[in-house]
Length: 200
Image 1 (spheres, one colour):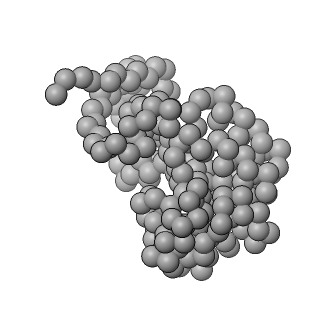
Image 2 (image 1 turned 60 degrees about the vertical axis):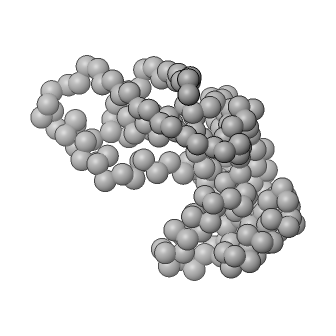
């Protein structure tokens, strides 16, 4: 199996390390908008480097595209990968609108490809425990569950500081974890609100 890694940041390296620990004999080719960055990343992480995103997914031996680029690029990269008959794993936040998500899902279905969002809260050990408690009826049927999550994100002027790149600010970048968490334990999420704090 060969994975094209589209985006050469810290999370891409983390995914490569995690996949290698599975011992599946997976090989990787990495791509960036900057070919020099891709080569440097490839050298450090002991993977192949591609000259472009297109080149990375165009090869017939690539099975999966792991999209770790910035959120504003996810839609284009996902569609490009699907067009090249790749399955897709996309980092969160996956897409900037529900419509984009629908479009990618439709394209994947049409091509017979799988689409997976790399959402790590789904795998937290507490998730199946809470789901079992709720399903057992031990505490009755929950009518309302209210979660108030706060996060201070220091971006130091990187891509997380640019609303056009993130596409939804802190709600998509960090809050999406909790939306997924609530759905994963079996709750039907009705409303989600994000508030940007101010002050020093």
